[in-house]
Length: 299
Image (cartoon, rainbow, N blue to C red; front, side, top):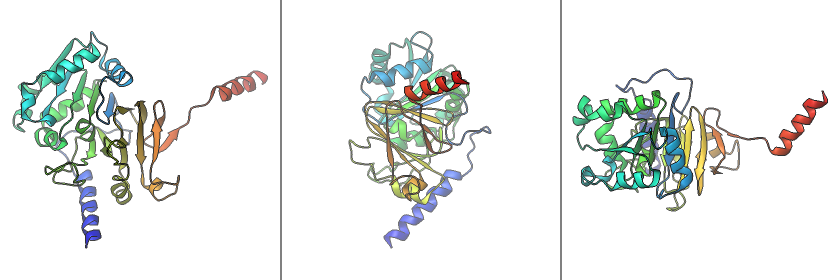
């Protein structure tokens, strides 16, 4: 009975991922990542990790030119007047123009007045907390479209912990009762990373096996598990690991043992992954590059 219930939830997940959305999604050659702009998806507890924050500053346009909006919905209503998240990011990054954006109202997120700061933003940062709150207030609103427009302008959408999970298409740990419910009452993310399911705090909280079953039963999904102070930088369908620990990759063929011993594998800082073809991007070594030059010169 438990197995049948679990399979039913997987089927429900598949339907939700492919359901139509009122948000205008443009045709794209990419399978998972954005056609333009970048995503920075962080596994939580980022602290002042220089490699991650330096990349965020760079992609947002630099300390002087960046215009960053910090979305605080995941932290709850108290964050509406709490400037500490803005202050912390400003102190770490040195970015001059940072603005807090908060709502607990779906209706407000659908107004032009509310989304005005997003119209000029070069970067958006979603703080941690509970990812279902972001879905409740922003999913399929004018603000949601404005986030996508930041990408279309070549900007960056970033987020840590809950701000990482919400970037996937299937919302993992989105139940209002608590994060231990893997598939709950909120299952649709903002789909910045299309056809994906994202987990965070991976090794710190011993979650590395939690994504296996859903990806096994929903092969269209790519699973991304991020440890703390570690991120993936996604542009088009290339994901590069940045930070101090590891990122786990889950796809059905790996889980079934057709590629590796499965059910997942780890990537570390500097390693790249092709999300579309689902292969590790192997960069040539110095010896291989020198060998190629010698071979070319000989001809």
